[in-house]
Length: 337
Image 1 (cartoon, rainbow, N blue to C red):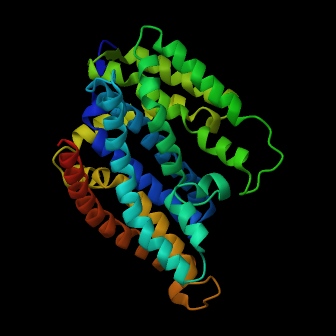
Image 2: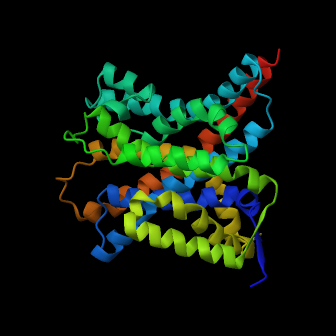
Image 3: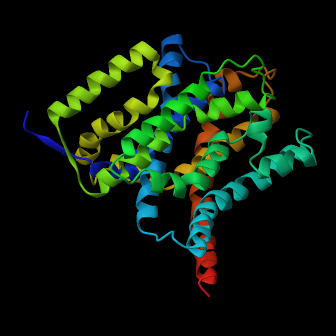
């Protein structure tokens, strides 16, 4: 029981963990894409939705490292920070959704107005569609410098819990209109997942300083988190268990180091954002191109359809990631002059 775990592992294996999150999202989207599967698998696949919370936690963690390296005491540094973040999000986003929106417009599914809403990431807030994760993370990035300043002091966990409780209250306010066009409902659904980002940002300092946690302390955290999740409802307390689940995965990641599993997870981790975007966009296009009324057994269960989405999506994500990185480097180099 004297064994200790180093919280810096959450940062050391962040890329592989992003890869695991990517796999979980692909699995989750298979269910959302109505791929036919046994009931028990459909139930398990719901937990692939945790991949979004993995993304949010790891984004908050990574953002702490980024913010801790920057002096944000001047307006210029704030602008520089926002440029880097928005480049990382919007360049891949536009590379995916400009052609996707044009295709959907040619197919008669999108109007010019719909294209504008899609490219601005506003379509989630107004119509509950599109890359909602991007719509949320853009807002979280905008407030991140202010959250960082509030969460680096000795009372950081008290402040973090106050923010999380406020978000939980917001996410549990009864809303009569729960349609896709209900802006309050869409805001509530998105911000109910934000606590994982807050936890990641708050724990960042402990990870960077290599703080250690004993087996006993870890066991207490697991027990308390489990009991709280059961009492309040698991999906209301995901933020409690995400860092624990990720940390439990670190021995497996460490054990696979150098293997094809490790290399595969690193690959998926590096293209995590792009693969999420291509998965959504390709799936949306194929739903239009391959209507559900097609009776050919080739399309039974939507297995072929989703296999095309996954394989083509990962290939495109890799290409887009490489091109986007070159564009970002050039933009950052030009901004230095």
